[in-house]
Image (cartoon, rainbow, N blue to C red; front, side, top):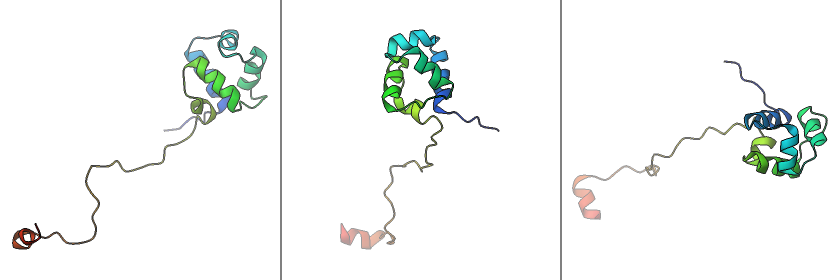
Length: 100
């Protein structure tokens, strides 16, 4: 399956459209001027952390979603709640009772 590459400028546009907001509405809600929003969405200027925070607050998302939209989570094994083996053999039977 092909995976689309999501850039910060495209992320701003996608989340704005998902909220059914115009650039003017996002500008009013975020305090970022509408021409700057247009330039960000068109890749003419960088998003930057300060603008990302303001836009994310208005879009009700975390700023990281805009700044690093293609970030992949490192694959981690989920903890099963079991303790890791120490490499020692388990003591069973009479020996276990002696250590108890």
